[in-house]
Image (cartoon, rainbow, N blue to C red; front, side, top):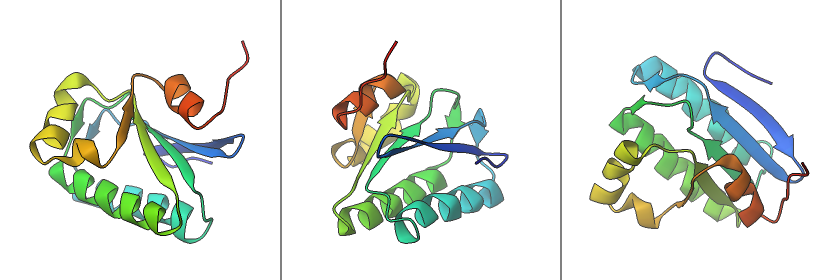
Length: 122
């Protein structure tokens, strides 16, 4: 399943969402991403979600708001959001706003999946 902004697939009991746009600044795109992400929790009751930011180079503060809401929705159903592949320079807004305490960060998708107990066979 994919849109212009996201590729969504399941690996075991974890939903992996790859953000494929290098720049996520457009408010319409952020709104669309938010709706798709919220649907994972609200409609599908996904409790384990990995957001893969490895292709993303620029984000808007509006996207942070979407992520906060997503994390709160996930926590309400005893779920958790993991963020993988986020560039070091994009972690700064998370640290400044202390959102780095709200999310778990991983260098890559494989490390995030491992924390959820999913091992990829090679």
